[in-house]
Length: 302
Ligand SMILES: [Zn+2]
Image (cartoon, rainbow, N blue to C red; front, side, top):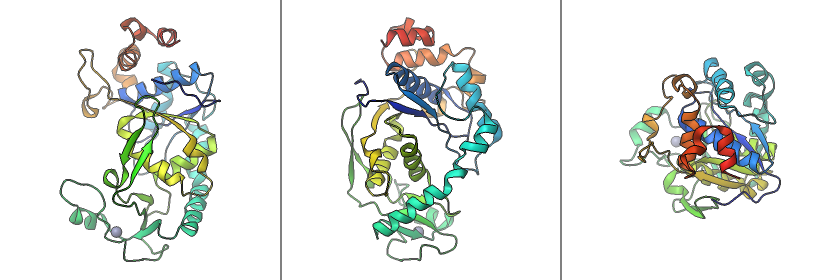
């Protein structure tokens, strides 16, 4: 793994309050914290709550409980659920996201198009072996403010995006095949995750993003968007570190569906955060003793 070379390092923990945090989330937070602290960087807690349909107060509280349980601090961000709702919720930034979307639509005609497909339409049109949107509305030219419509990005079918990665080396991501015409503005008029994530990272001055390899298509989508969303050009200088799947103690890959913490969250299900530290040590191929505590991990990474 290469060290982040951007000076200063500014990173973020970016959980979503749409479920209890599981082992994979906890490992990602610990790794992000270790890399940021080692670089003498700044760490934000940035909670993605745009998906209010799946939001539950218990999930929001679980984020703070889990960070506390892991012993991870951060430099900027909400101190607790009330502070979050009052000052940090993405609801407070909806106008920023909307302004960015409108400016992009004006600057790049054809970049976005309006999609009036219902859930049923989408299910009916789904192609075998692909969950990507088939492009039904691309040629319809529906007005941008038509009721009950979303906006999609027109992703050229063969488009690949180069993602520089501190751990994996340079990666080529076939964005057209991986995500297709993804949604940038939802039917409720709010920006979709990919747009909000870029705008938030730019606002916070993030220079290092640490995420799992399963989010590689999102990184590619965000890099591609940042080339076209006015005001987000600096996002293209972000350093990325994508980590692989977690391994069990005997070296088997831990699938998302079977990992600890799916039901009540890792902080409630594991007896001790050592479970998380040990998983981080395995991921980084550090000696077993490094997984005994957060301090031991820090020492082993010096
Ligand atoms: Zn459509």
